[in-house]
Picture 1 (cartoon, rainbow over the protein chains, first blue to last red):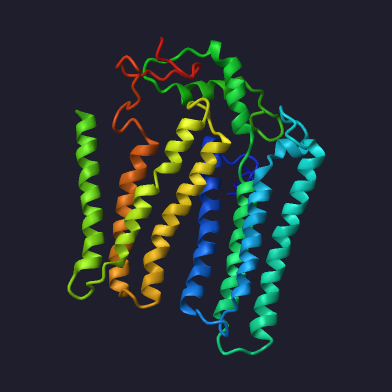
Picture 2 (picture 1 turned 45 degrees about the horizontal axis):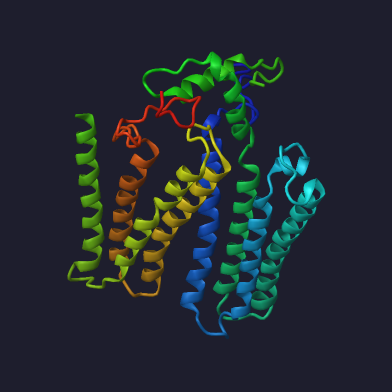
Length: 199
Length: 147
């Protein structure tokens, strides 16, 4: 019984494998669009300006723009190790990402402001639209974070690597070439002594 | 023969899903046909997948940004198809029972649509070459028709 948790490693060697990017994309999609449907729900139920000021929608729109900006640049471009410079180079990518994150945090904070300044502090009888705005922005924000940091770009690079490794990888007749070859690639990578992970 | 069985199973589940959807609309207690608009979501849900399949350079890549974007949008369409009847029920256009039936139909129909898209072996190789031969997908070539 003693030390049976020692074999467990926390998140450094979780075998997301090839599914990692797919799972992250789907999770981000669920978060993002759930956020928008929450605000649609509030807007449909409370159509009047008194209950739900229409200008509060600007918050979610800016959060969406921030989502697009954050995910338009890859991590490789920001670090400067991508193959192409892009139109503005590494500095441009960093400035773009900085503005994107600023818009994202700004919209999240603004939604909290709307909730408390527009509904709680005024002691309105109906608080639901404010909560909806807050949850919309929170969902979009975390959706953006998941889409940005949940995915790894190593899976894109593996494609490039597999092009070179491919001659050693015989094409099987079954047409199921991909998993077989990739496991062989994984086995050719050195195993780290400390983490036990590949690469 | 396996391909035929899969096709029959898929069409059966599609019919089940559509039955749920129509029950949610047409039962005497309900009788409101607004939920039929989810059919639009069903129709457009495979489109991102087709676009990504056409745009990505090598379909045998482990992953690519384009395909991940397609997953994102497909998820959005699916979430929208589930959100729409819920909103209709919340504003009392339809009853919650009808909403439940539509949601069940949604789940079955989306399984019917998405499962064969992401596991093409179920219905066999559907890509074919210009000369009519079935394309064999090797990993090291983007276009393997000439093998």
